[in-house]
Image (tube, rainbow, N blue to C red; front, side, top):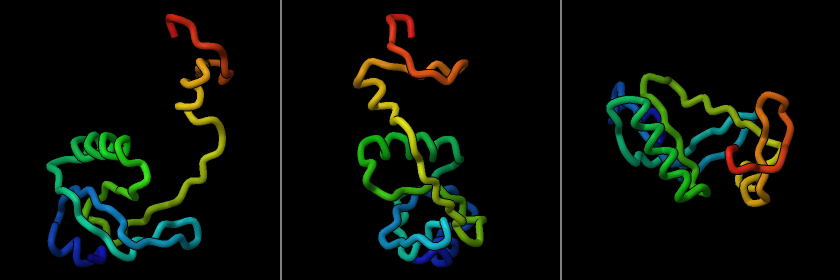
Length: 108
């Protein structure tokens, strides 16, 4: 389905969608073909479900969107730095006050 079709079939709803076909253009993700996975009563429920599903299958391109938007308008972010799972694996934490990486202790 394309976004306009999704909007027609699911008016004024929160949805979790999966990009079946997509491409990047000017730091934006353009969703060419979508599959609607589920509709939700509110954004909080949708985002909790997204977090669980993304944890199980991080390779899937999933989005939570409201159909009131004329276009999805998904901006790409390019992350750099240290992943949190790496820090956990090596027994370290980030001190948010000083923004320093330090060894994890029992109480951190």
